Length: 423
Image (cartoon, rainbow, N blue to C red; front, side, top):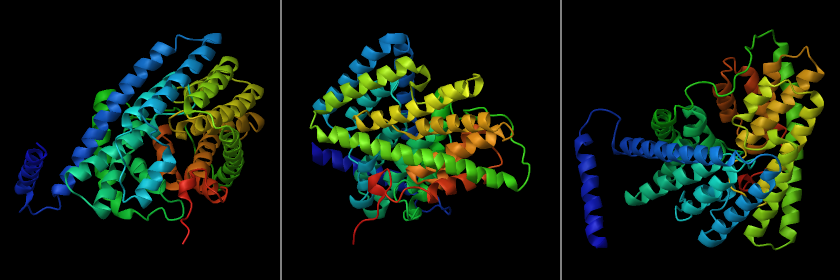
């Protein structure tokens, strides 16, 4: 049976090669493979988003004190899924596999990642869907590479292209998503895997189109800010100053998260006990501060629309940082990029309240960019993502802010696998 299947695959591969064997263009078999991967990635992302929106809508009816038992139960269920089906790992594992495992991302634990992340995100956890999508679409790229017997850099490039397709689908930024999939792998040499940029771009573009057709998301700015008017060279100085304050928050987040992780590591609890404890704590925070619930996709616009006092904004910022740290360390599954954008937006609003003469949009944008670049070590893609998601056309100040967050980040990265390998 296996022999027949292999013969069929070889036959299909030959059929794929023949029509383009003698074509005069750069387009070849690999291009079609990248495009196909992008189409598959877009479909996966679209289906995931539909299910996530449905579950979130159902669970959003639980409000007030009900969020505490809801998030505790969802945390317990997510932990049981991981315990029984398999641990899908975290972003550290993805980075390590790309760098040291020849680019192979195993798809065997995708069911665990999908189920656990849907539970964690839809009930209100402070993590977003970007990490699950990156893992699932990246492992899909590895799986396709194995089918077509790719090895070495070709296999690694296809895995990276799969990661880019998943990331792009959610954020609607093909260039930003492609660069992110490269930058996240190695914080000191962002272009170490530069050979994967074209595969990532092709897969991202196809994924973007498919996801936009399914969801109609990513066709315009997600977060609406007031129009920014360039007022002179001092805007760059302001962007750097805003970025320094956001980087300080980033340092606090990183070390707080490491502290919480050390507390969980001291007690050798089963994963479902950790997720249960995390759910209870997150439920309590969400009960007292409802705006900290969920990962921030819609809540950022609510921040921008509502007239919230500076005291409440400070409290929201503190407890959002705590909520993200608990979510990350207690075994809940998801990504922390959009939640960090929420923290940056909150800090920007606080700065504007304290110094009303500052440009609100510039303050928010600079803080969002800096804190994400500080934590994830992705200054280039962060700049492009922020500009795309906010419609901030004059993105040079954003680049200054991103680079400030990147170069003032702690020596030891939040994603530990970004560290240099010892020689």
